[in-house]
Image (cartoon, rainbow, N blue to C red; front, side, top):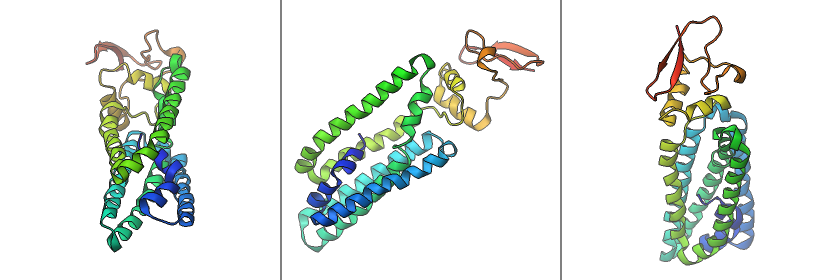
Length: 248
């Protein structure tokens, strides 16, 4: 929904029709622009756990929105004609490069990791299947409407994708917990809390504190982790009304 399928599938047509480049130059630039996708993907391939999950998704969506906004602004001068229209439309090509580079480093990789991470074991396979199916359904939708969208709205069509990308920033900030470097059992525990997002940020900053994580076999039926052997503990209710064992 952020416009990636516009760039991947229609970049040659976009450069030729919206930007006004020749067919051969559009084909050449289209190949180079899509190569940015690969280059951007190298960063999360090696450093995703250092980058985190929330920050790349938020900054990535913001930068994608800015790229779409600048493409729309620069292409809007085409109606004036002359040298200014040629200069601004040529400048817009640079932001197709930045869009693909940023997308490759953020939204291209993180959702594929994040979806199975946040799902509990008994629905992980089905939930991942639903997530992947949803991805390709929206891909199909965007690919089908993009030619009509750009032929009728021209530069204004990019504003739709700009708004969608900017909308993802508060969505991730308020709804998506941070799961970096947490085990699947710890992520399950986060969703037992009343404020999973705030709790996940606290855990990333301060750790689990007095709560000790044992193996799956050491956990009680409620899923609450038991204390380590040889440690005295007290059981009390936390702010969410859940029983938590704290070590002395």
